[in-house]
Structure formats: structure tokens, C-alpha cells
Length: 467
Image (cartoon, rainbow, N blue to C red; front, side, top):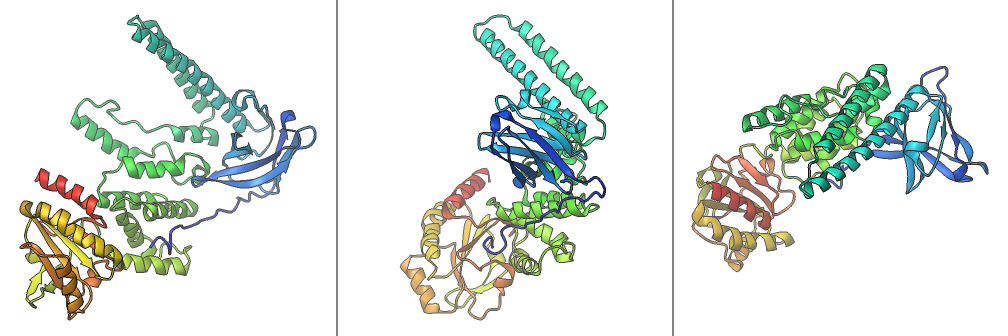
């Protein structure tokens, strides 16, 4: 699947703001005579070059664009060891005096109030972080020597209060400005129990943060896509702030997309980002996420920017997982054994059923199916495991030769096939690649899929031990 539609790209054109919409960032860097600089945009988790210049013999030059660039966080790149960030607001005519000895503390920006404020804020926090680091080091040394470190703790508390006071004043003086919103977005949401003492408090904190994770970010403001933190914050939310249950992850992703639908740009970016993330993930169950997004948006015609080839691909791939995602009840299959006796999947009633689809000429099947018999079936058969091993073709001789060659037998090892094609297994299970393996519980719900013998061993060991 990944080889056909692995990545979606969505490119935003620069905003046109009418009169006075040009950009000019004058550079004064005597230490960088004749150097080449690049102005790059942080966008959707990556960095894109937007302009470049070569400084003069005096180290001067300017980035010039006929139109303003989108507001966001940009990077002035000198080389792989020398670069710094600058915030672009609606004021995009200003000067940067660069000092390569210390970009944070010695660079000077003039002419754009919010860009200046960004630089001052970063400089202040950098200084206070250094002070705090020294105090922490001093405190650890005193603690190791069993000496009183209360005075150091008081200094740290005072420093924290100073930083908090600075931030409060900063947000008040720059209220509703992009520079304030940018730094606000970096602040994590806090719940009612930031330091939970009981399991109930921890649970309440978790679900509060799940609902309020983006309280400090306007999901309809596209400028956040031009930062170095917001795109990753989306994936962190899915990874850490949602229950690790495939359907919960899928619902959370779809809900997040729905919140952006009132802004075309943010909607397209959010849907594309989450779709790409799910498609690229190797975690079991992440197909539930992209399939849910397909159901809620792509297949409903709500992603009309997608080209026809991609939509065709996603429809095709969705058909393969429509009925066999983790959490779904597996479809029953009327099959036959080698004596032409009917065996229904649902009639296998032990704690767990391992459903394996294979073809004898498949290289992986030649390894995996015998390994499953020797290392899993024999190990767990007495603990409640059934195996339904389904041959996908119609050559009975080929099938039985494979079964006999590898001694695939046992009271709860069921060699099955569908010679008359009456089960329509291909409609309900993804057998486009083999072996195709599903682990079902007693209710015939799919609890795992696409696992190799080693991972299945670990999972079955955990499940049957807990049972």
C-alpha cells in the first residue's frame, strides 16, 4: 500500500495582502563577508527554503520578496552549525544585525515590533534557564554532601516567580498579537490534577487533557502550521493523550480534523497530516485511523483537492480493510476440510483462534506457517488456542503435499480451504499478501493482525497468562 500512496503533499501559496505587501529583511553581518544565507520557513514539520542571498564584502545584503511571506517562524540558515530563528508577523520590513558568537544574546533586530519582542523573549528565557541550571547543579552538590540546600531552593522558587511574572506581563502587553499566540501555543494545557495522587485523579487528569490539549492553540489559525512545534504536537497528542485503542485513536483523529473544517487551509493540512501519519506508522491498528478518515472525509467527497489517482487508491485500499480492522467482529466463513466436511469459523469456540491465509508457493508462507505450527500451536494448544489454516487456491494435491510435508496436524489445527469459492473470504479479509494472519478472541473479534510468529508468541503468552 505504501508504495502507491505513501505521502500526500499540500503546498500553501504565499499570502497576498495588497498594498505594502513586500518583504525586506536587511542583514548586517560583518563576520560573514561574502557568505551565502538562506531564509527558510518552518512548515508542516519540515523546513523549506524561501529565499537566499550572498552578502557583500562588508557583510551586508537583504532578503527581498515582492509579496509578504506567511506569518510564522522562519530560520536564517548560514551553515549546518550556524542558524537561528526569527518570527515573521505582518511587519516584514526590518533589519537583523548578526553576531555569530552568540545569536541569542548578541543578535539585534530592529524595525518590526513583534520580531523584536520574539527575540527579547527568547533572550530572557535563555538567561533564566542558565541561571536555573547553575542553581540546580549547586543544589545537587549540597544534597550529595548532606548539606542544607534550602537557600538554593528559595532562589529557584524566586527565579520561577520572576519568569512567570515576565511571561504574564509579556502576554498582557502583546495580547492577541502573533508573537503572544506563538509562545502561548508552546504552553501545555494543565488539568485539575497536575500531580495526581490517586488512580482516580490520574484518570481525571488524562481525560481532561485529552479534551483540552489544544486549548492554547487556535486550530483555525494557519500560522501555527508555520511553527517548529505544532505539527509534531498533533502526533504527540495521538500517541500520548489518547487511549491506545485503535478505534479511540481513529475517533480522536477524525474529531481533530472536524475542528478545522471552518478554515479551508487548516482543514486540508490537518486531514493530510493525520492521513500521512497513519499511513506511515508501523504500529498495529493505525490502519483504523486512516480508514476512519477515509470514511468520514475522502469517501464522502470532502477532500476535493485530492487528485483522482489518490482517491482511487484510497478507495481500493479501504476495501481491503473495510471488514477486518482491529476491534471488528470477524466475518464467519463456511469452509471445508480435506474430507470435504464443512467447518465454520464460528464453530471454533476456544479462547483464541489464529486465522491464517496462505499459499504454498509463497516464500514467507513456507517459513511462517510451519513456524506457527511448531512454535505457537504446540505451545498454546493446551491453553485454549485453535488454528484455522486456510489454503487460498484450488489445487488439492498442492495443498495436501504442503500439509503433509510440514506435518501440519493436530486436534485443534484445522486445515481448511474453499474450493467452490462460496465463502467470499476475499471480500471480508485482506489476502492480497500472504501469509495473512488474524488473531481472534472467543467472541471472534479481531484483536491483532499482520503479526509474525515471534510477535504472536509474545502476545499469546501475555493473553493466555492473564486469562
